Structure formats: C-alpha cells, structure tokens
Image (cartoon, rainbow, N blue to C red):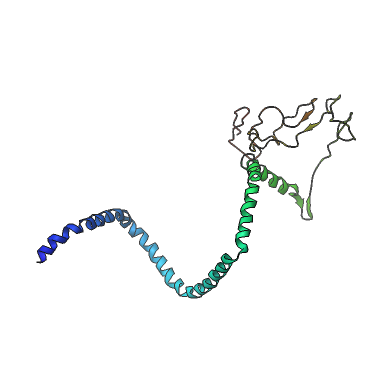
Length: 219
C-alpha cells in the first residue's frame, strides 16, 4: 500500500522539487557571501537584542500619533486645504517653468548668492566694509545723469544708452542663451533690449560648457 501511495504522490511532488531546486540555485550566490556577511548580521542581531526592549514605550506613543492622523484625515477642512495646495501648484507651474532655467542653465541664483556673500567679505577685527567706485555718467543730451526726453543717443561716443531690462535666461519661448553678464558692449551705439545673436549659456563658475554662439569650450 505504501508503494502504491508513493507511486501516486511522487509525480505530484515534481513541481515542488523543481521549484526547490530553482530556489537553491538562486540562493547559491548569497550562500557564497555568508562568511563575510554573517558577522554583520550577528552585529545587527546583537544591536536588536539591546534595542527591542526599549520599543514598547515608542509603540505606545505611535498609537496616539495614528489617532491624531486619523482625526486629521477625517477633518472636512483638510481636503479643501489639499485642493488649495494643488490649485496653487497648478497656478505656479508656468512661473516655475519660466524661472527654473535661470538656475539650471544659467546658474544665476548661485551667482547671486555668491556675490551677496562676497559683498561684505573684506574687513578686519573691527568689522567689514564695502569697496566700490563711482561711475560718472557721460555728458550730453538726454544723459543718464540728467532729466531726459528720450534714450541717450550721442552725439558723443560715450553718450549712448545700453539697457536690457529683461535679458534672455533660456526660459520657455526664449532662445537658449544666458544674456545677463554676457552682453557685449558696443561703443557709440544705443542698445536697448535683447542684443542680436546668441550669447551662449556659459556664466561665471561654469566649466566645460559649450557656447551656442561659437561652439567654443571654456577652460
């Protein structure tokens, strides 16, 4: 009778045996590193033996935490607040998308903080100070130093307005360039707004970046 039962049951055990063989094959790499990992596991168990007795007070505190979370989740005002946050994020998405390249491409935020930090970096035991020079405005009609009715436009070579209040920062819809700090100064010519050509994306503190205008690589 035993042989009859075995003859009937052993074929049913073949999938289990095949799966067991596959499991052992997958565990073989782990078995090879056991001599190296066993001490680490032993240290972990030893630490756990010391730590586990201290967990009941922590578990009791967790109960009150989950009670507070449940109360928070049941508060009808919470979904309204979450929806307001989602609406705020949706409203800010275009603004963030426009401003992000100013840092990720042009590094302007980092440069601003660097320059602000260096503003008062010189000093002695008595304190710090700023060092600066006064830039005199050119003399001529509509000069920046006097009331004017139009942008300065000569006749002297220095009396020309150079102003770009909204430089390109590789934002969506703009050329991929970092104009601020990269504008060339053209003497004897009034320049207002974005200057012609692509000024590239290389700014102070970056290295290995390729300019879009010339293809040159900064050292």
